[in-house]
Length: 127
Image 1 (cartoon, one colour):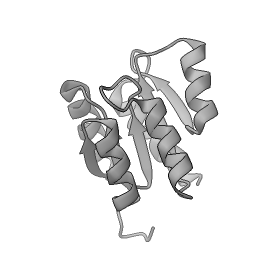
Image 2: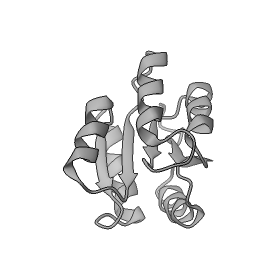
Image 3: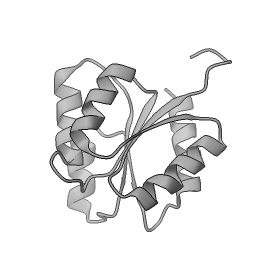
């Protein structure tokens, strides 16, 4: 990524209200944002656009976040960081997502969108 390019984030989230807050937070700090409303669409967009980072909900209809992570990690050699942003807060959910290849896990109740965007920005700078 050159200095003039904005980092690209793909947000895979089915709740439009949550999605809107995340989009605004990332745009405010200079990200180009693409949104997907469900996992299968997110998989296609990830392969096509190769974002710098993916912010992923776990609980979605059809293809959930776990299936998304598995599909991306198995079907390609892309090392795109996947950051979970979920309401699931139990240690089993966290460990499963990280074990499948997520880079970080943030709980929606503990991490507002602005803080999420800032943490993700730092995370991809370390790439």
